[in-house]
Length: 30
Image 1: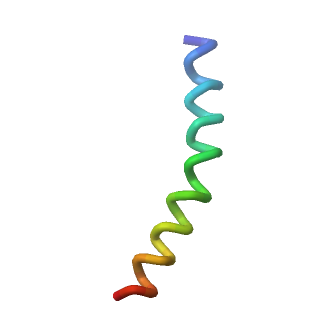
Image 2 (image 1 turned 60 degrees about the vertical axis):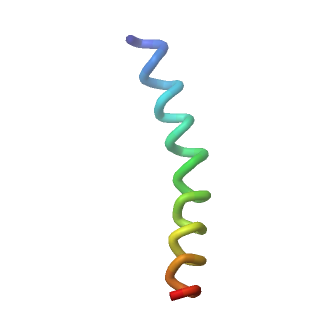
């Protein structure tokens, strides 16, 4: 568990900006 949590945090840290950019593009297209 002590290994799984940091990996999940890193994954979320990497995916968060990508997801935010996708949301911005989605709003622009609408």
